[in-house]
Length: 608
Image 1: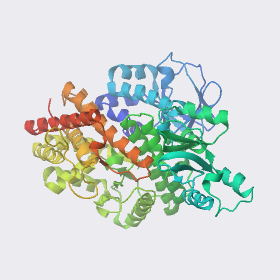
Image 2: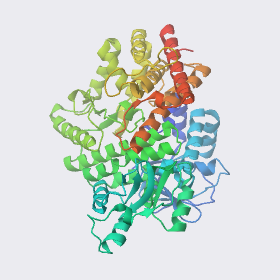
Image 3: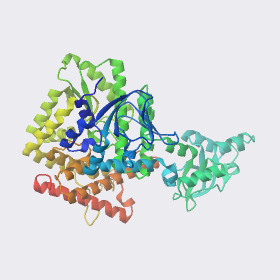
């Protein structure tokens, strides 16, 4: 089955960094791609061979091995391979084989090098992604504080052995720190319970923990490296290592923690999702996302790398649920496209995400066919909720008939919102301008996006209303270099890092994309494209991107810390829990956002 030019065009619009390229550049690029069909088991290239160009997976999966034959990665649709060799001497640095029948797009070497020189957003993606991937994989260079389980579970030396065993059973752990007040005095493990209690015939009720614990166990501090943990465990043949600071127990590292850290990656989770036979298996995979978030943030990955990888998992879950639904319902009566909006649409999901989605249906649709689509929407949406992506509070979901309509109806929606930009229309337009195809016939959306951007950017009244709407979320700046925090409730004295933090920048970027007819949906990609297109000045663009990066990084670091503390992640951050240096930088970032909002408000259009 051949791949048409419009198929490639629709696909590239869902792949970063191609979705961030100027439209004329993307149009120039599409015919340059060579389409290759490979069978499962075929070798794509061998280490040391000259590379014909950059490979981009359109369908199927690929396995990459290093010089020793060790598998170093498994890649799936929208992943690239070969860039490492192209950026070195032009020869393959690894060996790649198809794991399944696959469709590969090959961008010739000359085009790849030209884009790296001429398109900063393209070069930034490959150079940054390469370094973070290498750093993320190396457990030996991680700080101990990033690897340990926290908060630590403890008992007293005066507790009964039975009580300690009950804690370990109920909390599903294999060890407890034994503390006297705040001071660590020992360690007790399930192995101790077996060899020192059961094997010795001791009474678990009358035997105290202090009698069978390992007193004064080996410890490390949070500033040690993962290599120190590995060396100590191997040398001393131990499987549990308390982490202390000033004699106080801060956390625990086990061999299981190290194994989980090494094994967990977005690619592995996506593979598990692709093989899942039911919702229960999908739920088990998405339960691992919080730990993945901690791992990615702990590896100092940039926020846009972390959120992209987290969103890739959501996309994979959505595609798998659609496939499971179609297997049960049978083939669709007419072509359709499932799209995401909100944070999934922008590829900016964190540890807290609801679902925002809709369906575009081919105009050959008959109302008698609606039950099939209603069943599809209900199956996918309800099972997304079961997997942790809770229902949208505003009902912006495909289960709402309003958001499951033929393309002609969607064109009418956008047209009416642009012609009559009343408050509800502004809100709906803001959400729907962040649409991104997930699975289905991408051509159903391809033309609509360009038409809508052109129509909206020409309507000065609509643009003015969108600008006004974008200024409703203000950065949390207080008087005297302080912060405007939440005044009442459980989040009192904290900052809402979503609505007061990243949302003001998201809204600015959306307006820039609208006024410049820019196709990227991701916020950072929109800012980069706006700067490159001259929609905002180079100085203003650099400052706003740097401010956004810092705010978004703070938000993710806070969520990772909440997860490590055993809490559910949220978007609230206590600014006075940080030092003066970090608070000062965070406030400066909010000042930059406020300044760009003021420039937009005063100009009535994007500042230049």
